[in-house]
Image 1 (spheres, helix red, strand yellow):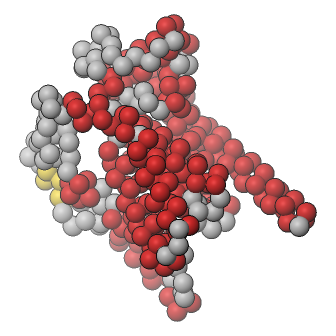
Image 2: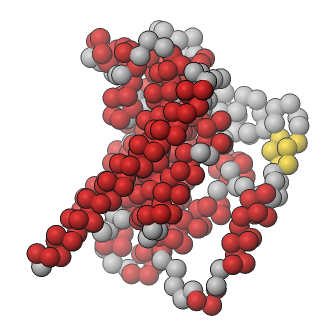
Length: 337
């Protein structure tokens, strides 16, 4: 028995070291663009909206020891709690914002936030890979690949930052929801990670996390039909209920919002529908996206033609007898999104 616990502690220490290394890999790789171009993470919406508000929140935390639910320092709208996307109910984000007043340069402040979140994302991908039973070698490949993803860099890390920070927490939430029935600590971590994902403030990741959790929970409950099999669903629900503190103010703002169109083909869209999200984020959908200037941009079959189909051809399907629920859940979510 003693040898069992010693072996378990050794494995836990080893995976913690690998996660820490993955975190550092994310920081190092994401720092390269910033060293080449000082404003690499300070573009578009990060310039006009997010960084000024992030700095304002950080200043209030440091100098007045208060969380600013309202501010008069931005012409974008001062109801910070009603905007949802500034993450003021996320303790990790608040800690990071509190460091910003020390950094006198807005571009470097943006780089600091991006690098830390890249570290969180890289470590989370490694942990998710290990949860799915992937070897260390390929888990590191996954971590490096996600950090070097140009779509995440171009659209999220340097512009739509709440989407980026929310993805960083979402991969952790997915991993812990898949492990929620393994131990009480995994269950608690699933609740916390779900809360952090939602309170960071972007709807797409909430939908993706909810779909993943519901698929996995449904499979677990259907196959096992025990109370333990419902723990992933319970952890997801508890995290979601705790995060209502950040969602309810936003729902109240919808009553007076002047951007309530649900059609993503309009320039004033603010509340996309579920159908729109599934279409836009599906890489193999044979449809098109209509941008505000009325240009039809065809969705390429690049991913299906160059990555998915070859992988299907080289799989030895006869040797597959059983697909773990965790892997099946991830496969379905990847296909949908």
